[in-house]
Image 1 (cartoon, rainbow, N blue to C red):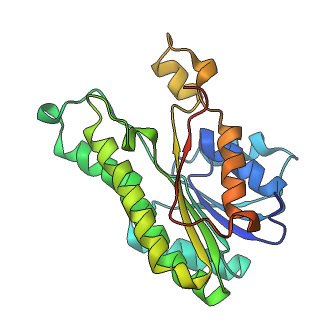
Image 2 (cartoon, one colour; image 1 turned 90 degrees about the vertical axis):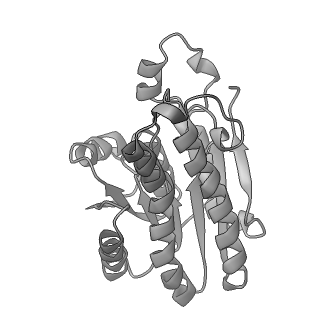
Image 3 (cartoon, rainbow, N blue to C red; image 1 turned 30 degrees about the vertical axis):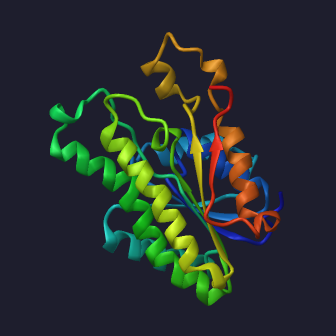
Length: 237
């Protein structure tokens, strides 16, 4: 899928999934602005990309804080001119905590990082896309939003809320040539997940590169008639 000439904002683009997505977006011809919060991840991402992708710009931002999101969006527009694509990859997981033992701070953190981050980025990117004549937005929900198991109430609630948010925003920008879709991965094959589940069959997990291919399609002109969708990306898990 070609994204030649497009400007993409990728939040969390330096993580295990983010690196694969950032590489794929660059290889498809887009210019990317990538956010990070952990200082070590930016140079690690640069090393991972090597010569396989166009050079993105890296911007440190906490996308759960509105003033930082405002500064982020303003900086991207000032440096790159516009935003055609928004990929909301920031997220996190905490499990094995039943509701009766779930700290309020953990609940708040799960909703902030998985749901509020996407809300704030969409809130401030949508006006930029409207001025530019359209765009593509993709959020990353989870299979856990629709197929829960014990101990993940905060994570599941945030990811389920993200589906509802995606559908609502899609209806609001329907006439603005902006599509908004969500993907629902199963377990992603990352080093962190392999360490957390050493006895699991990781060969069945969905690979970051496979998720990246789905995201490229949703960012391309080939997907222009798809909006408000929640698309499973389960691999064989």
